[in-house]
Image (cartoon, rainbow, N blue to C red; front, side):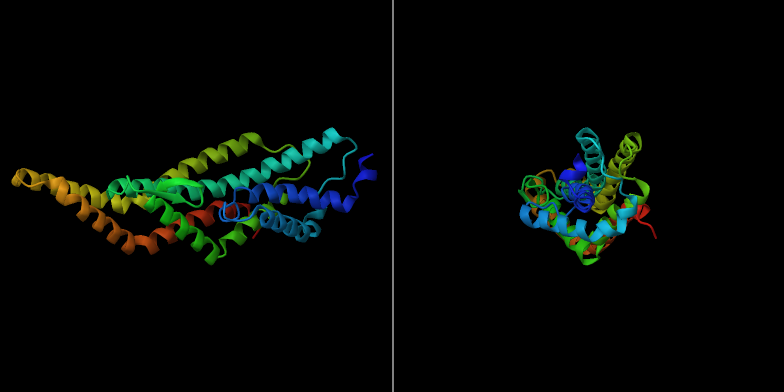
Length: 253
């Protein structure tokens, strides 16, 4: 009955669109609130139409019942959200790193709008997120994300039940890796803050009448900005390498 209502070509394109569209909902850059939903929908449909002839041999035949169709669509949605979650977690690591940097440089009380998360965050986190998005699109890593989704048709065949246990294990490992990545990105600031705090402690003991905190805060902010300016290229390259390594295993080289 479904064959009479939906042609086979339209069914294949819509099935591909479900996986790609679900991934675009969470992919860094594509899922930004500043991207109009209509443009995101048009981009997903365009990519689906281009990819459908390539992955057509992996697509299942149209099911006979609506219940079977719903099961297939739900499976494709889960797979797309899985890839989108990986990209979103790596971008969220910069927000965590930004809070580490903010606390280490006395800028934690200054909050600003985070364009990627559509909420308030630290100034350092918002800056790192914006710089990382620029880095991702400059290095064509957004192509790598799409390639991982397209090549996933060889690994996760449509119509089969997604490996939920493997997905959960992978997401747990990505969460651990992204938290470690955020700490690694913020490590120069944490080290400088420890040395600076040690020096302030010694200065406070040697000169008790000096208002240490009144003098230290502007100096700590200036040191934090200086360290950020010096280490930013290395931090972005480190993030780009980790981001690339997260999607490379799903790309058929």
